[in-house]
Image 1 (cartoon, protein in one colour):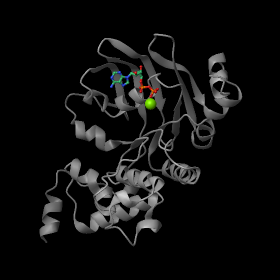
Image 2 (tube, protein in one colour; image 1 turned 90 degrees about the horizontal axis):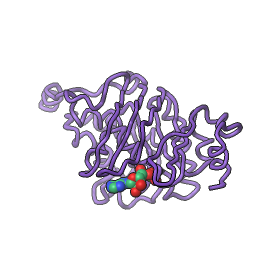
Image 3 (cartoon, protein in one colour; image 1 turned 30 degrees about the vertical axis):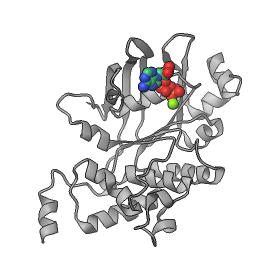
Image 4 (cartoon, protein in one colour; image 1 turned 90 degrees about the vertical axis):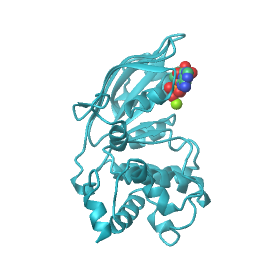
Length: 277
Ligand code: ADP
Ligand code: MG
């Protein structure tokens, strides 16, 4: 009864996964600076609901910066500033009346290097986001979220008998899937992935790609990847970022992934997707 009481007095109650509608993320005229160094110049991109959008392009052209702007992590960097809008289903995530935790709960992030809390149990790692966003849940609900999130991340069968073991004891690929499960437990509308497989072996990479192809039915996905085969395997649409010498980064070309790889419009895109720079 106590658990039920605390559950009902929570700030909000998580919806059932099936009732979380797919959402579109739209960046409008995003510019970004570190100090007075401009690193992105008026980037606009629509990331449709139910699609995997791949961001490709050479190092240093602002892909990670763009991704961090999409869930308000950019503002954590003291020298960073930005202009433009990010709309989640039409609502500006930078609206001053919206809480920061709200934007972060709806828009999760997975990084290149798996970063579970190593000493924390697998179970507690999965629900860590609930604690961080101040979400109160009862035990049954937590158990359900742990199982469903680990299942979606393709890790449940491997860890169901050792949920109390530390997250740090898992292999690299398993740790990354644990991080994906941790992101999913708060039932985000969008999952941002910054080179999520770059630190992983080919088998783990394949498992995560398969996971993404399943996940996109529930969550809008944006992935940064340097792996052109991966971009073709997982993405619906692609955006090619490039920064000229001493110039801020921007999108040279974007569109349907198959078209972008088979018949790119811009010569620079052609050269990049064919490994020429
Ligand atoms: P990418 O992910 O495409 O490799 P980044 O977004 O990491 O590109 O970097 C874009 C530009 O911003 C680079 O010139 C990089 O040096 C600069 N940059 C990135 N992070 C910071 C930071 N925290 N402080 C200052 N400059 C940064
Ligand atoms: Mg990067």
